Image (cartoon, rainbow, N blue to C red):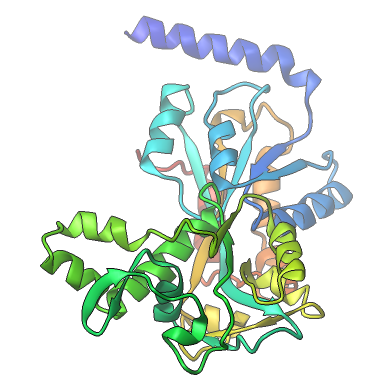
Length: 343
């Protein structure tokens, strides 16, 4: 076994060595949420160092991690951007393809906001229960768990507009979808009593948790597989629609969009940093340790990205909407030490 592994390692090294000259740019792919931050960093990295500007592509967290895990060698990407943590099954897929050492880099935090046409209906205040009642297949009505009868927002909350329910939500390949499900839909399921009713009706807790994440497939919830510009276009074309966006994207489109509070809290860098705003998440990128020393500038790019000058509270990423990580110094030290995740 050790001979086979050694031969494999030598083969990887040989591939890397022979093709290194053909690629001297760091290659990055993944989350559309992390994309604008990575693009800012890549441009600054090219301008302020002796290394070429990294190539940064989007495609979504899951797609980026899938590419990242396809193997070691310069024909494979060096960095995967993600708006969620890498999953165990992805770590396993990486390992099966020889990607055994992965450096996790948390760059900061972002909030998920619910926004609508600036001059459209008065969608100004939501709770997690409102989103669940609008989109879930089964909801609580008069103390009973029933098929969702709601067609207008005002059907279950008189304070919301009497408009047809239409929500443009992140598609399943986006890291944002996981946050939307867990921190909004599942939270609403629990708050309304629907989860308890499912369990009382005979469901196991695990099955009830899964059922709580489901959304209607009848057109009122529309998956957006592209980036936030596609969601914005959908909102532009549907005055009664609401869309799920990252805080930074919303803040750069306030001329077109208005944002709603969630559970009474307005989204901002301040409310996300304090944890007061309930729908926030950490953002990451993952570095293929085997490519450090093979791809020129890879480690330096990672260090540059999370430097105080860029990712600190007064840096350009914060100005664009990233909420600086209070534990940034720990992340910097781990990148300096090339500390890989423990599998």
